[in-house]
Amino acid sequence: MKKELVFGKLTILVLLFFLSFQPSILAQNEKSDFWNHVAIGGGIGLSFGSGFFSGTIAPSAIYRFNPQVAMGLGLNYTYNEDKDFYRSSIIGGSVIGFYNPIREVQLSAEFEQLNVNRNYYNTILNYDEDYWYPALFLGAGYSIITGKVSTAIGIRYDVLYDRDKSIYAEPWAPFIRVYF
Image (cartoon, rainbow, N blue to C red; front, side):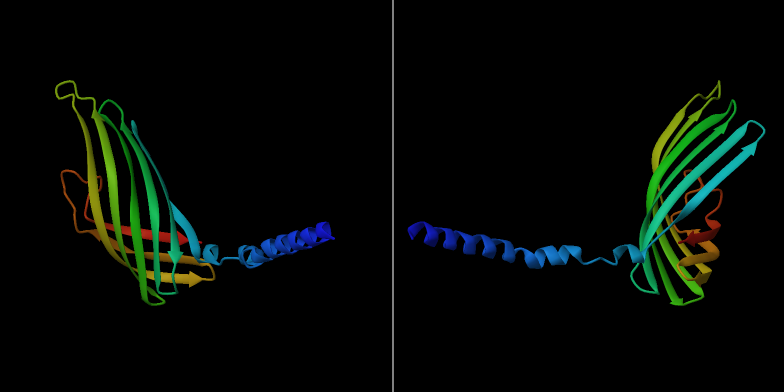
């Protein structure tokens, strides 16, 4: 009789223990819609010339909070080489935000931080550069949204532009963005 009582109490305790985890198990089975709001995009660039090569890869991802607001992160790697003159590696990241006041207009702000490493092959002035370069781009563009694909074509301006340190020739730059 005593064994049956102990067994009964133990069975009840085990059942209560497992039943206490049921809500958390059910909560883990619910699907999150996080990935439904994530869009992937980026850029790729190649340039060739007489003794010159430049290649860029710049993936990015954004999270669409709602149809008007999105924010995300980007990475950037560029390699340049001009035969007998210089070689450079540029690596960095960015934080980007988009605001669509109306469906067809996209306003953007992007803070980019790049590590620039340049090696010059000049026999007289053989020197290297290694520095961080910040850029803050403010832009506006025409936006086309079809289903999960969004495209924007526009122009952006680097408000922190430094002619001596920037990897860009001008503070103004056109852009084409595609996220899916």
